[in-house]
Image (cartoon, rainbow over all chains, first blue to last red; front, side):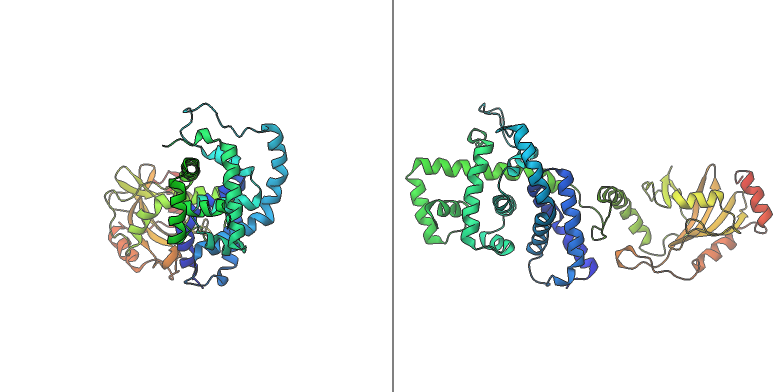
Length: 170
Length: 228
């Protein structure tokens, strides 16, 4: 187990990635902040369960993901129905070629919001954070084949939402 | 693994050498597959870059201390983080004997602020020096020791707030430090309380005081006169 100061240092080191993960899972910045706060609180309470030498990021992200399932996810699912009705099929993608060099955070979050949760978490872990398939499978407690097929479906859905025309080489 | 899953696993660098070579050969001879690889690489890159700004935002100070109001605490900690390096410099030893020169940036909530090339009392310490009589109960954690005049006639007061003790003399509307002593500091910035003010403070007072320290009545009168 880690001492409090060691824990704070580890948390500090992983803070930017944790924040990115929280945003990838959340519907907006406020939900992401709530998720961060809940994750840190849970992590502090269960600091004894982290084994020094094991991957702190996996441990921390698992706590975040479980907290998301327990709280934010049910809330965002309820909200998603309204968002979908308001926005129809558009996630704000401009189909004119060359008008948009990249995706901003808002559009990316809106697109991720439309994915089924089990695809969204895999995309957040592997495509955005860069976890390996095996680490993601262990973190999520799923077989690697399941992770792999969810990632394929998530990617294709994202491409559909964000538009192939947006994917210019630059 | 389906062909599609294998294709994406290749894109993600998840295949062993033999399988990767096989998929690479397939992609090389299939323009549609090559275009799919390009589009999905771009998708991944753009998705990551959309999230990049989050990676640059500052890490809150001492995040392990569980906040209840996250935003407010984060802002407070951001402010404190800015002020910490100066504090750390001060805390390195028993701080300062005689204070002069520019040492500090301003920290709106701390007991010390830099001003015009000197450091002066701020926040709760400044309020205590302004308003608190030595005989009064401890407020804001600040205990006032002696009040006296120095050889130039300026009113000086010694203080002890548990973490810092020192001597400050009135200069215009501010309390300018003559000496500032920090109690020994342990890791994480928690103060280990020592009993009473630093012994060097007594020596500093002896060197500074002109005549006798003010009694309770003299202190009240000096306060009523704006510490002039």
